[in-house]
Image (spheres, rainbow, N blue to C red):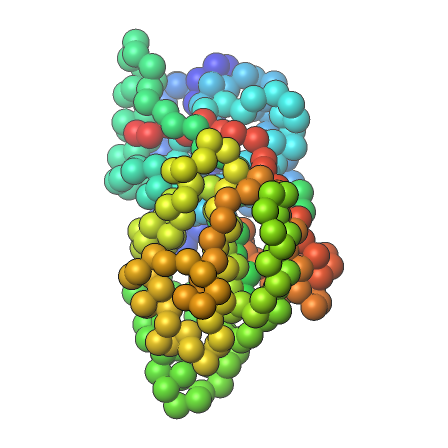
Length: 310
């Protein structure tokens, strides 16, 4: 087989809402490839070996950003030094940060239809190369610690969609006004030491550190504007305001895009970064939650990957 290989995650929220989606995607795909439903990480490894042996040209992923990260990690491990197939994102998640950064729009069925139509034609499909991050053996595009994984823990516990995330943000905001427990659980002062491969070491209190190879956060905010100024590497942005000032400073910092310890945010680009706290800490990579193996975490460059921009 040299066509399209589809991986669909039945556990993503949108796919659980539409259990017949896998069958519909298989119908649209027809004879142009193979669809696999993966329930576990072991399934991902098995499918990666199968698709590699069959020489698929395009890997299509139907799931959210976490599914994409887990899938690409399994394929990078299986392919080793060989380049991966070009990747198509079917927007099967709730927020779809990576697909939004690539400008991909539509439902999974609509995106797959465009893919199948383009694949059956004569011309080359449009694509874009993205840098990836490697963290403790996993691969992705957007890392964060501090308030980000704490917020996601609460968000996932409530199992709500984008409107639920907005409602939770409002509740956190209100909790700060009344010195509530919810705000204290999500936002705290953390002592970070950031040691990049180039430039000075930064040691400071920070409520969150973000590292990314894509320009926009969820909801489309372009936090990582320095990426356009470097040919390789990733951007790190650390929010250096204290927890008690987040409510007031965070919106101002996002609006002004200024950097500096005194302004509440420092940003720089590098190819490797050591992030240290006083103890092992929670972090997120593309929406998946992890606990660091020690108080020191290395973020480095992963392989460049080619994504179709359908």
